[in-house]
Image (cartoon, rainbow, N blue to C red; front, side):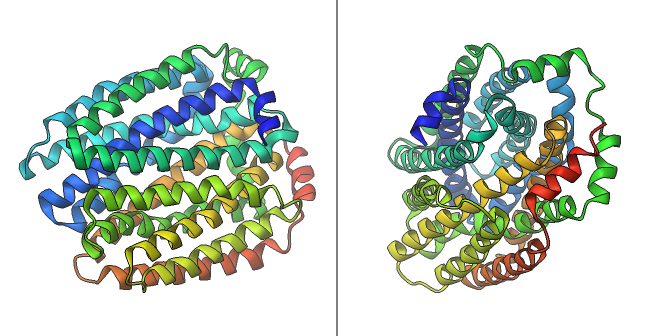
Length: 408
C-alpha cells in the first residue's frame, strides 16, 4: 500500500488536504456536540444539528458535477474550503442556549459546502489514480478517515475539555485555510479527463445516466444500499455522542475517545481489505452483518472501555466494507458517469443519514439509548443479509461489460 501511495503523487496532495480539512472539522464537531448537550441536555438537539449537516446534500450534491465541469474540480474545492473558513467564524458567537439557532444555521451552511466538495473529491480519485491502484487507494481513504478521527476527535475532545469549545472552533478555521492552500499546489484534479469535461460541458447528462440505472438491477442494488444503510448509520452517529456524554458520563473526552477508536479501526481495516482478492461485493455485505453484531453488543455493555473496544472493531468492518464497495463502483461504472454517480449517491446517502439522525434524536426523547442501539444493530444484520443474498446473482466483470456497452 505504501508503494502504491508513493507512486500516486497527485493523490498524495489530495490525501493530505483531506486529513487537514477533516481534523479541523472533527475538532469543531466534537466540541459542538458536547457543547449542545451541556447547554440543552437534549438528544433531539444533537439529532437536529447532525441532520442539518446532512440535508444540504439533497440540494447541492447533484450540482457538484456541473460546477466541476464549468469551473474545474480544483477551483471548486478551494473555494468551498475558503467559504467554510469564513462561515465557521460564527461558532465563536455561541455562548448560551439562546444561541442554538447560530449552531443550526451555520451547520447547514457548512454542510452545503461539504455537499459540493465531497462528490467532487471522490470522483477525482478514479480520474487521477491508475485502475490497478484503486483498491489500495480506497484503503488509504479509510486510513484518512481513521487519522482524522484519531487525531481530530481525540485531540478535539482534549482541547475542548481543557481550553474550551472556542479553541477547537479556531483550529477548524485554520484547517480549512491550510487544506485550500495544499489543493492550490495541485496542477489539476483530473488531468485529461477534467480538461475534457471543461471543454465539453454537455459531456455528462443525468438524462443519459438515470435510464441506465433504472434498467440495471445491479446499479439499483448499489443505489438501494445508499438508501438503506445510511438510515441505520444515522442511529450509530447520534448514539456515539449520547453514549459518551449521558450513558457513560465521560463528557467531551468520552466523545473524543469513541471517535478516536473508530479511527484506529478504520486505519487497521486496509490490512484486511488487502486480503480480499475477489467477490468484493460478497465480503462488503458480510462486513455490514459484522457491524450489526458488534453494535448490538455495544448496546448491552456496562463498561465504557469495553464499549470503546467494540466501537473500534465495528470500524474495522465498516472500513473494509466501504473500501470494497467503492472499488466495485469505481471499477464497474464507466468513468464518464463517475461525477454524476457519486453526486447522486452522495445526495442519497447523506440525505437519508440526516433523516435518520433527526428520527434518532426524536426517539431518544422517549426511549433508552441502549434500546435504540440494539434496534440499530438488528437493522444492520437484517440489511446486510438482504444485500448479501441479492449480490450472489451478479458477476462484477459481466456487469462492467454490460455498462460499457451503454456508454454513448
